[in-house]
Length: 633
Image 1 (cartoon, rainbow, N blue to C red):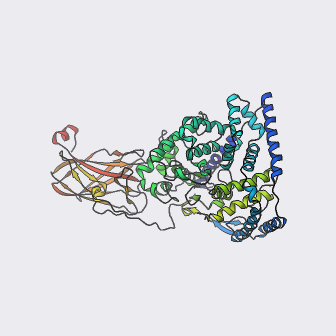
Image 2 (tube, rainbow, N blue to C red):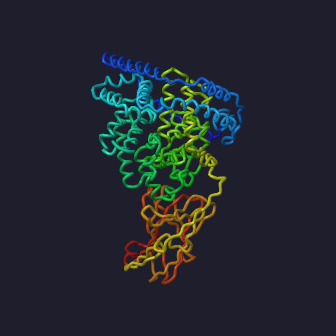
Image 3 (tube, rainbow, N blue to C red):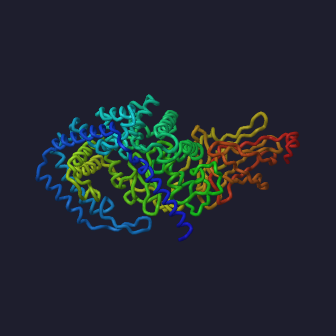
C-alpha cells in the first residue's frame, strides 16, 4: 500500500472512531439497582405497560380497501430494478431511495395511497391528548424503565429531574418531537437542560429554550468535549459563549430562526471541538476571510477549506509547535479528506450552522444545514454516506425535511409511536417494507416533503473531495471600492498611511480579492489559488526624500511566509510575515530609500504561497539620529 493510502486509511479510521464515540459514550455502563432502584423500575415499567394498553385502544379504524391499496403499492417497490451510479469514481448499485428514478416514481404512488388512509384518520392525528400519551410511551420505551431507575436511584436531585420530565406533558411532547435523548439518557439530558436554564434566564423562552433543550438532548454523555468536566458544566459554558456571540452579531443571521420543530438546534454545538478552537475559527473567518461569511449557504464559512486547506497527503505534523491545536495545524500544510472535513465542520459550528460528520466508504466528509435543506460538502451525495448522526443517511435527510412542518411531523410521529406500541416492524429499505402504522408515519414524512415542495439540495463540491481542482468555473466577482478607502494620507510627522485599496488597479483576480472588513473598512486577501503571481501596485507622492520604515498591517494563519516588494523598479526586498494566529498585526519594519515626489511600490508573493490578508501599509520617515542609534542603513 502506498504511503498516501496508508495515511488516508488512518484518517478514515480516526473519523469513524470519532463518529461513533458519542454513541458509544452514551451507553451507560451496567449499574446494579438498589432496593429503591428496583421499586422505581417497577413503577416506570407499570407506567409504560399502562400507556401501551391505552395506546392499543386508540388505534383508529382504517378502510380495508384503502389499507389494501397501500399494501399493494408497497409491494411494487421490491420489484424495482437497481441502477448503477458513479460515486467518486466507483460504480455503486442503487435500488432503494430517490437515487433510483424508477423507485422514486413508484414511491409517489405509495404516498398517494398513504394520503387516502391518513384522510380517514384525521381526527385521531389531531388529538393533543393522544399525542401526549404516545410521546410519553415513546420516551419510556427509548429510555427503558431500568435506565431511568439507575439514574433516579442516585438521589433526590436525580429522581426530581426524572419526575419533572415525566409530569410535564408539554415538555415530554417537545422532547420527543426534537428526537429524544441520545442513547436514551434522559436523566443526563435533564441535568444538562436544568443547568443551562439555571445559568441563562433567556433559555426559558422562545428559540433560546428550544436551543437549550435540543443541545441537552443531543449531548448526553457524562462529559462533553472536555474529558475531566461534567457535561452539564461544559454545555453551560458553550451556551453562554454562543449567547454572547449571538448578542454581538457574530453568529449567522439565520441562527435564531432555523425553523421547523427546532430539531436542527441539536446540531449547532460541535461534536468534538474545544471552545478555544471555536473562538479561534470565528476570528479566522471574521478577520482573515470575512468574504466567506457572506457567501450563499452551500459554501458559507466552510469555503475556508477550499481556499486555505489544500488536499495534500503525507503531511508530517510531528514538527509543528506543540501548543497549536490540530485545527490550527491543518492550516499550515492542509491534509486529506479528514482534516478538510474537520475544518469545514468547525467553521459552521463556530457560527451556529448545524453540522455533522458524513463519512462514506473510504472517505471523510461533512454535512451542514442550509435554509434550503442539508447538503454534504466535499463528499458524495448524502445517500452514499455511511451514516449521519448515527442514522441511515436518507432517513436523516427525510427527518430534516419533514420537521419543517411541525404539526405534520407530530402526526408522522403519532403513526410511528402507534406502530411501536403495537410491536410492529420498523420500516426497511427506505420504506419498502415494515409494519403498517410505522410505514404510514414514514410516508406521512414524504407527504410533507411533497406538500412543502422541498427539494433535495444535493452535494456541494464533490469534485473537490480529493482534489484541489474544481470542474466548475468560478466567477470572480468584482467589487467597487469607495474613494474614502483609497485615500493615501500624510501625517504631520511625515508618516504616510497607504490603505491597501489605494493601489492603481482595484481588480479581483485568482489570487487577489478585495473585500469589506468586518469593521466596515477594506482589506485584500492574497490567496493560494492560481499559478502565477499577481501584483498590487502603488504610486506614492513622498514629500521628502530619505529613508523610510515600511510596515504592513496583516492577518495570517500560517508560518514561514514572506512577501516581495519592488521599490522604484530597482530595489527588491523580502518581508517576513508574522504568524498572527488570525489577529491583526504589523510586520517588523524594513527600511528603504524613497525619492521626493512620485515613487512606485509593487507588492506580490512568490508562488507557491500561502494566504495572507492585508489592511494597509505605513511608511515612517527614519530620522538620521534614529538610523545611527539602531544601525539602520
